[in-house]
Image (tube, rainbow, N blue to C red):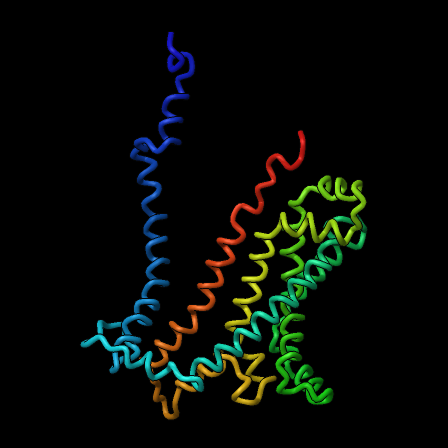
Length: 296
């Protein structure tokens, strides 16, 4: 008697798991899910198509349509230091500074929560989680008054510190989860070799959770990159405003909108985030490969 005869379910299950022909009932069950995914995908693709078509059309409108003639005049119109380069540089300083400060503070806050057991850990973590539910608009009036009293209004470093503080709760929660995946035994081996706690954190824990740090950095960076409300309130000088605020200049008075230039600006505005994501994803690839690091 063959193995298939002794175990009648081994053959069919392996064929299904290995990419073989699925049963008709299985295919019918997947049809509604595929249709729903296609519908969701179309909801994301259509706005992207509008961006591409409108950026190449000098007479673009709010409708998604093919341009009558392909032209790069919209890109040439926005590629100026006043409209694009200066605001993009301000966005880079604001987002990178916020992400760096947030990541450094999140690592120092998450390390004791991950490595030391205390009865206050769980209430503290839930307090952090509740802090993420507080809308930023609810605290902007007192924050604005505080910035005026301390003469920090229209200050880029002060805005970076405030935005880092608003991003810190979620960053601490995410960093702790990534840090929990690093075995404590690796730090204990470093302690036996004479390393201090801070040295073990810097030389053992952080390199192993590099991919997680990249995720937190990108998360905070993208949040800050697209933040309109906080820089609009705290940064008054046009020379200090990021691209998320300067994009408002394409919306004219009486409903007049430069749709073509707006689409071209939006595409160029999205490029740095995509480049950062690709660079961090490549640099952090395989950093969680802990197999073989712990014996047994």
